[in-house]
Length: 491
Image (cartoon, rainbow, N blue to C red; front, side, top):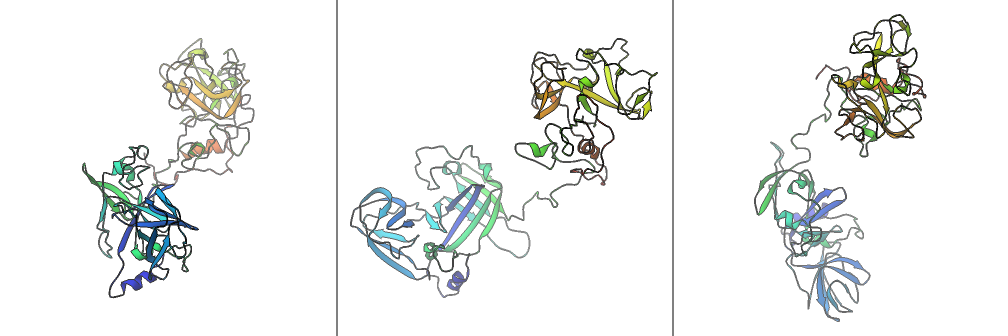
């Protein structure tokens, strides 16, 4: 952008060239809409390729007609050039001339056969700006008080914003507009105002000695809200990019000890947050080891660590008070007063020893034991059930996996997206998924520092179907925790 030349113009006694205001609307990252508020009747040059001239509006012209091209030189001096057409055209925007020497993009064309329109585009800085029925009011600059909030009024916007109309307000054959366009879609979009003098529309920065566009300083706004809306006009309120309501500094809110990141968010098809925990629960610092946890950080373990394929409890895995159980040992405890417990009736609870040797009875308030839950593989035709009173004791499954012939055999392989699910409605056919009426996620982050610790610092084994994980974590591994554990507790 260059303002020196245009400033010199304004310092003169009279400005001989008209003021031109142009607007650019960043509709999407790959789409910018160019428009101007006035109606130009001029036919202009939009591109020059040798002796081929491109116009901003289709014309029908006879061979041999002499045309006059009016514009300004690079130095800003008025100039007029003439040349003849070497072949006739019919309703075309491209014509061939005898010579294009000294012709420039943006020049106004007159001559026999030239038909002006009332919605011609304006070419500036290599962009084509189309006429749009609009009005911008209140573009003031103040050095004190509250920032002004200009308004942008646009007529009939939903019928004008069409892919094929190009803001010309012309018949476009009733084509559909921008896909699913709504008035509210413009809220939050950036609007740039560019102002120059008409004589500088002809300067091409690619060949100009200054290599600069001559214009006033640009002004940028954000469309903040719809102020009023009628059947004819919609009025938007604009704001400076740094004067928007609802913007908070800092943008991240500190909430005591709870991690705000989306669990496994970096694995989503559209990554979100900072949680890098893999989708299938593999421990990043320990290849081929896995850790799955409930929202209370309780381990989710393979069913076959305690049960045989048929369902009976493996030898030495049933708790009794006459036996000493070493640290990390897994046991099944008959629950609910059932003298003949069965895994199929969910009448066991499962525990892992925390103490070096213990024969105390496992219980939630017994620090010698950690409650765990068991999962099988999902396979269609197998019935998965819920517990009558304690939902955390419902059936758990891992899905998807490959190579499983039944829900309890160990001959299966994890995939990159294998996830633990918990049954909430009895089923023998519903496929587990995040939007299922029968299943919910079983592997869930508790959002605490410990939730991060028991995953990233897990000391599980690569043979997780044969050996239980080690409860003691490896504390020298870093934790990508998104919360603030040193802040005050807040729920």
